[in-house]
Structure formats: structure tokens, C-alpha cells
Length: 172
Image (cartoon, rainbow, N blue to C red; front, top):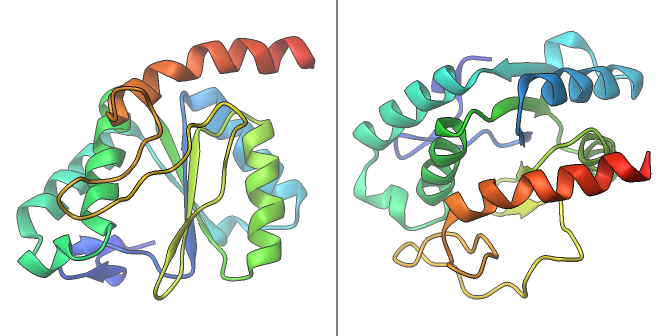
């Protein structure tokens, strides 16, 4: 997938795709296997290493137009960069069917996916929710995304993952 084909105002906006973050390479590989088991074709799944995502995010931030701040795209790019700096890996999945996207998100969550956003033409939907998530508060270009953490910082959400991972492993 060529990210330059999926931009809005200079920022990555892959309409018809789901962007999924994993805390490590092994989880991303398991997620890739889960998608294959669901019938996704190899051409519909694109992997990004942390280094690739940081480079893409840096390029997006550098070329973002002032209009990119109107929606949440620029805030998501900043959140992706924060997670990538912490070693997260990524799958970008071509999907524009809501029901199929929900099934994929459920399967990916079971394999350790931390976040998944489904990009529609007008809305970006968070596909993974947890019972421990805090109630969502307003999001705006000024306040950024609501990472649903006590501090309101995305980096805190990245640190919350290890405890949830061990809980998930105990249930298997």
C-alpha cells in the first residue's frame, strides 16, 4: 500500500482501511495469521514496523496543512507515532464493510491488538473497546484524541497494555 494514495490535507487517512496497533512483532504476526484465517488476502494486509511508522508519521506531520487539524487525522498520526516510538507494530487492513471489520477487530484484539481505527469517508471509528476504558470525553483538534487514560496522554495507554496482556494470557 502506498501511503501517498491515502492522504487528506497532507496526512495519512486510509479511507476503507483499518489501522491496527500491536505491542510487539509477535502479536502482529499472530494478528496477520488471524486475518488470513478469516479469509483476507495477503494483498489486503500491510505490515509496518515501528521504524516505518515513525518515518511515515514524521513525514505526515511535516507536510500537514492547517486544514489537517480540523478532523482527528493529525491527532491519530501523533498517537501512532507515540506508540511506534514504544515499539508497537502495525497492520493496515483493507476493509470497508462494518460487520466484517467488527469480526476482524474482535479476532485481532484476541491476538493482542491494542487499538484499531476503521477509516470511513466522514468518521474514524475506534473498533477495540475494553471494559476498563474510561468514559470518552470530547475530542477536538486542540485537545487531541481522548486516549481514555487518567492523565489524558496516549503514552500512558501504551504503558497500560502489559497488565492487560498478562490478564489475557491467563484466560487462554
